[in-house]
Each structure stands twice: as structure tokens, then as C-alpha cells.
Image (cartoon, rainbow, N blue to C red):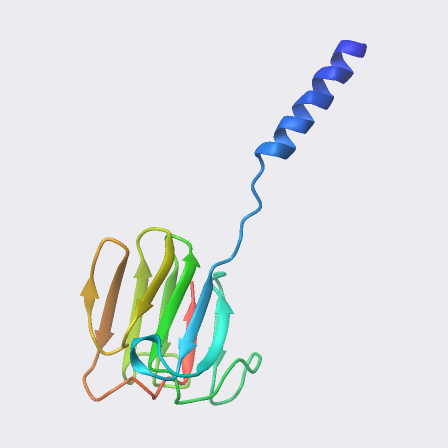
Length: 141
């Protein structure tokens, strides 16, 4: 009986040591291009979030029509960040989808208006009349 308790105790100890608590990454929305100027908003990369900056729902995180770039810090692979000109968060106006392909310790997305792809991200800009400084909706999946 003592052997069983010892085995359970050792197993629990090892399980506790091997369990790594997931840490959220950070998305820092900046007022200027290239990750410059003031921080407009800062949120985690947790999936299922959305923010209508114009209506300030579901919670106020930052100013409407201000952000022109985003800094990704410790962002998980598979994260999808979408920013929209339309306050409803739909494709009726300009929008940009940033897909994270691998864990990113630090990366600046210098503009929402330039599509590109590298080993870390795929950035897709849709439409052509301007999104930088006009973001009204943010979604994280």
C-alpha cells in the first residue's frame, strides 16, 4: 500500500513539474506606422476576442480610427488577427488578416495596407482605399 502511495505522489510531482502554464501573447496597436508613436490599445492573443472601437464594445480598449500598425509579442502559432475599417467587423470595407504561422517572440507589422508573407506571418490586405488610421473593429481567433 505504501508503494502505491509513493508512486502516486511521485507521479503527481512529475506531472506538476511537466505541466507548463500557457502564457498569452500580447498585441500592441500603435498610432504610427512601423510600430511607432503612442499605444492605441493592448490586448492578449487569446482566441474569441472582438472589439468594436467605435461603439466601445464589448469593452473600451482604445480609440477608434487611430491604429496604423501592430507589434506582436510572444504570440502563439495559429493566431489570426483581423482589423477592419467597418465597425461591424465585416468585409464591406478595407480589412487586413494577419495569420501567425509560428510562435513569434517579437515582430512589428508596419502597416495594415501591405500584403506579405514570410516564415512567421501571412499578412493579407483587402481593398485599396486605406485602412491605416481607420481601424474600427479588431478580432482575434
